[in-house]
Length: 218
Image (tube, rainbow, N blue to C red):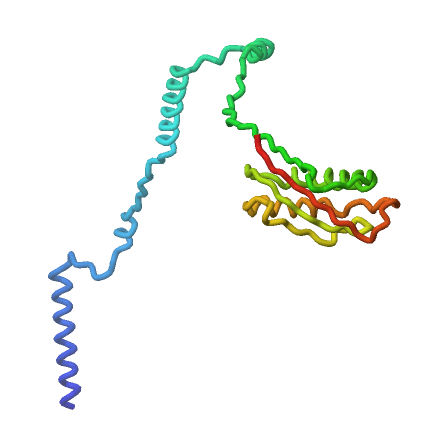
């Protein structure tokens, strides 16, 4: 019972307080009115388009470019005929570069095969064959002789009947002391071999020959 009374008392107090507030403060609207909502207007601000500004800026640039190009026009190159161009090039003289010629000192080589004084051979067939040997050795010596050294080399060699060289020796007592000339003389006999076969008149299995090779420069 006590709770029902207290509830009723509290409810009555709240109703009284709300009523007094409602009548004393009429300007307070607890619910929004429809008229207030209708009065709200939304306005949109249109941004100014920049397309017109861009077009005007491009036009200004084109005007400046046309003015600068018109003021800086270059004259066209002069017309040149082809015939005239080639005529002028024909008159150009081209000089060859001068080469410095090296000073060449001509040195004559002289190689001889003198006859031996102690040889006393009268057989003409032997002498003819011996002359053939000397000529072959002389040609080989000219090809091998390159250094400017003078001297003589005394050699003895044996040839078989078929023209093959069997043996070769240098007489050290009668020859020069220069080793280069000794090597050249010996090599020249090796290069000249094989020699021709013995003639029929020289019916020997082998024959010995002596030769002096003289090297001189002029």
